[in-house]
Image (cartoon, rainbow, N blue to C red):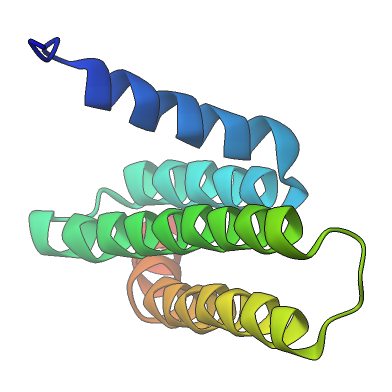
Length: 122
């Protein structure tokens, strides 16, 4: 069977869109990313600073997508049962998002905030 070109990209885009539509935290991350891009544009970040901002956004969105996938698979396997191992798996996946969100806040504090403040006092 011949594989259609671009089909993987379509599925990936659908997965991202699904997470955005169905996960409140993904929408929060999207708003935060849009705010970071807006502040970065206002502050006229240089290329290296944009790379840090883009990396932060990509890492948080990726972690949130993996977290969502983990939650769906665990729910599929366990159903509505309370299973300690399932809870541990879901909580650990959520912790990965938390760690990367904290990293993004560090990037915002060291890249975005100083650049925006410098632009304000120009």
